[in-house]
Image (cartoon, rainbow, N blue to C red; front, side, top):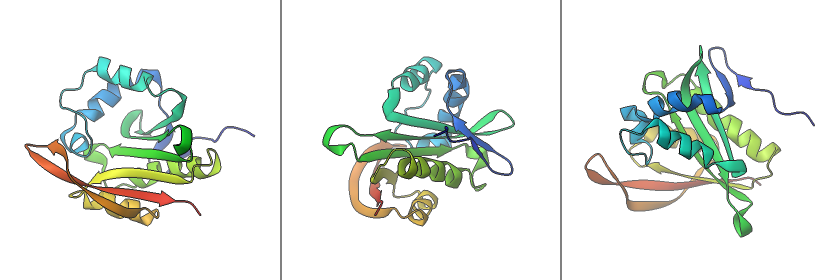
Length: 171
């Protein structure tokens, strides 16, 4: 079988991350709205991003969305090990100035396609802050279901924030 071809939409391209993406991923990770949806701390350095990318290994499928050579979205699917090798965690973020263009939908779709058709992953799970209604709706359109509320899950912008645990189980 051949490798899957990079997917594209009318205005953006989805492709695998590359080592030379480190500076753009760092800049993306430091955007206020992007960071607010993650567990990342402010002022992430290029070295921290490089180490994070290098630590992915073969268990993580990491992709970006790109417009005119600018990275505008980042997503990853990390397969668990051992008795949880049928499951993976999903994470995604979109550039503050490029939300609402279908980038998140394309990134999630690409990762779920890989999970279903290339990796034989049955369960994909994620956490999402409860105030991120747009992301919650997106995940629900892909069949993710709410499995629980994680109270005081993370310290975010000066307060403890709740998260939803969500998962999609392939039949």
